[in-house]
Length: 171
Image (cartoon, rainbow, N blue to C red; front, side):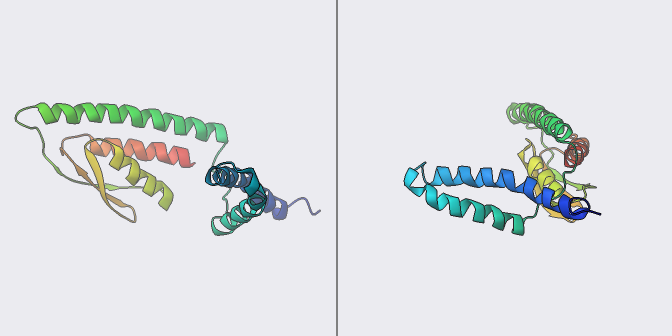
């Protein structure tokens, strides 16, 4: 087996592929922090690679979880779904707020997630809190507790759909 085959080159490629966007992000951050001052560029040539290297050590890149076009499409579809659900939920909350008597039955809903990693679960928690009429209260391992304005809302179906979309995005 030659030096360019096997796991060595694969590991190097994964790290190199992860370094390029990090260098770009840290360079942009450096440019913003220094307000584009030309007299600070020599420091940037030191700080940017060191920052990118440290970030690679602390948060090593993982192999891609799926082809980029598929993940990009999944992310776009998740965004549009979230915006639609937010619009529908916002309209529902607005109608409930002006209706007399106020039509609320607040309560807690427990959702057992099947998402495999912590980042996906945190995303589920954050997106749930951004949707009108819901607020994520607690996440313990695979159990998410959500406060809802009305227990008759389709919260369980929405959480299941959000979880499905997040798992598709995560690969």
